[in-house]
View 1 (cartoon, rainbow, N blue to C red):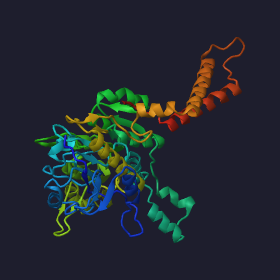
View 2 (view 1 turned 30 degrees about the horizontal axis):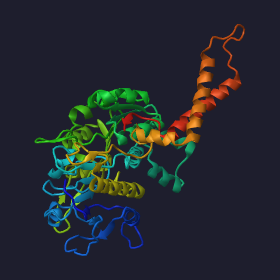
View 3 (view 1 turned 180 degrees about the vertical axis):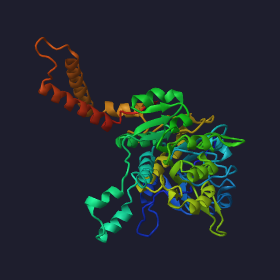
View 4 (view 1 turned 30 degrees about the vertical axis):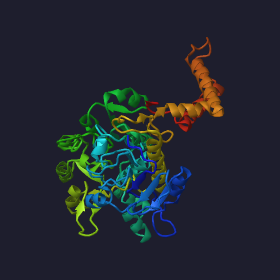
Length: 470
């Protein structure tokens, strides 16, 4: 493993999104975090900097780098030891011998061969991510997209009519029938942190939730009250909403494994007028199949969130959003396009992810410890398990350790469990002669209180979802 006492880390995406006093995305929180970890945060390039304090890490912030040419000009000669990125695509030939961290879950944009490309396999440096950081924000944006079109109440039109005094509630409401989400089928492709958060929101809206994931997830999916689907086709069959959260998968000579996963067969299986939401990766949907489904009416609406890059000098566009652009004029408001904004516009989420990325890259450089490794941990580094926000993704050893260190919460859960067990045993006992099927109201109230306290206590402790191990 490369040993450098004064490592230089390139940061190629914004580490804050809310605007500061200077009108630029605010970096103050991440600057402070880097300083607290004994590092230095610099605006601009490391090139020509011979004044760097020795023996500490230096982070160089260049959030406007986007094209492969710009990235190669800045980092192609090995100037930097490591990199932190979010949405920017990193070319295969960039050398970062101490590794890279992607702020977020998927690592398809982390294409450097030094760590084996986006799946982190076969490289000499570690590839890491920050899973779960943006899961809640992304899931909320998925439902923002869904609620914009279902229930299909024309809110803007009704506002206009009401503002003009041109509406009579008694006579005119019958002209605007709608169908809500309750009882509708939501198909979720993928049971990672984001997919699970989307499934939870679907349940909160009273939807029937069907999740496609590998068979090893089936018990956990069903334990949470969702249906398990063995294939994407089985998940999509008869579904009113399809939301994709599976990632690109490994990259092969033919391309990413999951590219085109949502094609003719899957889209044709949906209920008529269904909604497709792809707030994952643009390549997951076959755009020819999408156009055909919108044409036929099988799809009522599609919402896509994918990267779009524009060369500042030439205006040339690139990125996975490109194939969708010709469809925008063709389908009008039945197709909504976002520039990979769903997961990347929440300021607290980006700051938390950036701070975690700083911690991970410093731990890897200083101690050789790799947290949230993607793919393989190369020789010379040590796997240090994973970390994610409480309650996101599932249950791990860290979450249980936190619960063990909170005696008040632990005692409350134990008390609620004991009361609930006692009342359920009372309910299951055969009635005494002459009592009939009557339930003592006091016992019923104790059972209901214990059930609610246990449910809310488990949620607050994050004790829901699959076991994630250490």
